Image (cartoon, rainbow, N blue to C red):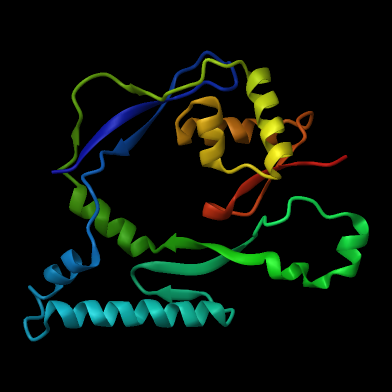
Length: 214
């Protein structure tokens, strides 16, 4: 039976208005074997091993297709496409180095996959949840926030970027002592403020924050 809870969103704009969102409580993760065991209930001529083998082969072929520059769409599930990022082995490049080394392109790597879910699977999950969702007991859950002021968080963030060349979401969350959700909101606050020299690069898991040079 799925449960959800009401989560309070931090008021970063100082409006004084409380905002909330609803999230499903995690009940763990199902792996490929568990899914295969469910599939063979309907296709009794197949074994769990055969189903797992087929899915594994499909995943491998998807990797080949995306490596050839094509996105992959699976009807009823969604679309997959690779996202690129830079492997930060070296922190700084001077102008001469940048002009003389076209091989810097070797540092461009596939850092993640962008996935866009099909409306079909969204509607199917909603259909299966309808009438079964139950709210967790207790009041709204408040996200863990930092005791640091905005200026203190900004100083720490800039210093971290200058020391390491870039900053990831998990780095920021640990640096200022907040949840990943709050970290994402606070970093967005920095990047939308034109007076703050911080900008985001990449998307999804490969997203990083760097100092924007004047």
